[in-house]
Length: 239
Image (cartoon, rainbow, N blue to C red; front, side, top):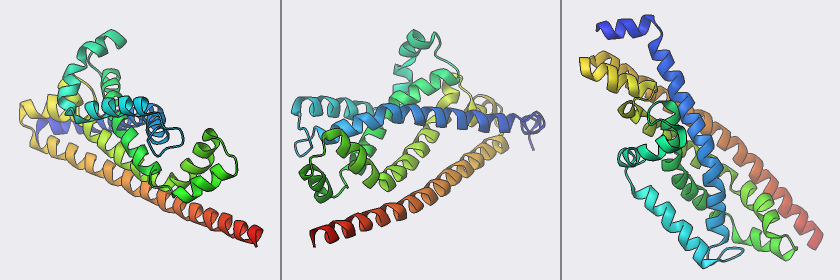
């Protein structure tokens, strides 16, 4: 057992790293969804088969999303250093890392949301339109409830992806388990510290996936029940 391992274990360094990793991941995921969810909705409704087709807007957002998604995070992180300094006054630390994570993950979230919403049955959407529902009501009452299980699964995937990105925080003097592995363990060749950081990251991923999928399954049952009830009511009304 290395000296660094003993030191980190005694002063709680590993648990501080876990806390910082969770903080960066959760904060980045929430902010990414605040940006990415509306973008994904706009991509769906402005598509040629959407509720309000707007070709130029759909194309513009699509190109921007594709550009940012195609840049490897490590390269994007370096490119965003001047942007982080301009916004936050620093390019190091958890705050800078969160900013970079949001910029990198929001386009990814937008595509995940777009994919989930496009799974919604067109018949349900057309039925809502035939009853006079406007665009906002269809989004709020049809698209989002019907796509909820898929959206949750997409959120799990996005959160795990952001967690993986956060491990690169050590390269810009950020915090978390990535920083411990990169800036402390690697220079001293403390393999036991590196592998414990890996194990802790794996455990966090498994917890996120298990809890998220449990929620998705429960939501899926409620949605199916609601849809069946809605269709039954419609059948009785038509009959």
